[in-house]
Image (cartoon, rainbow, N blue to C red):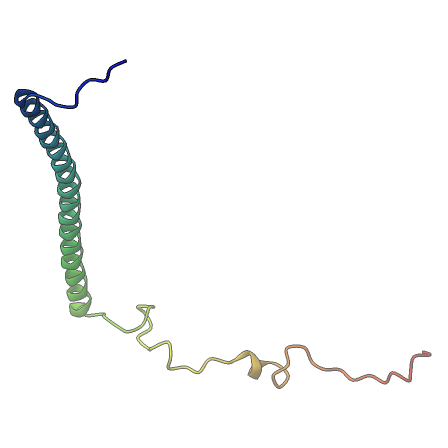
Length: 115
């Protein structure tokens, strides 16, 4: 069996090159479109998040200014109690029990077990 010669005419080579370029352009266009789809959707998402952050910051400023100008504003959580929660000394568990022991220590005479 005879093999075919490995040469092409100029027209065949031009046609092959043209087909390669057409395939490359199509592939490049698809990649560009895909990148645009990814980039623009991310860009829109980031823009939306930035807008929401700005809106929340504006609301925070409004809340802070409202709290600052209230006549009954106090440092206390309880509006009726204007004292700070740190003013009164809290009784600790150690002070409230038998000198730091939660259960009083009882001593017994172990030698007296016959009763």
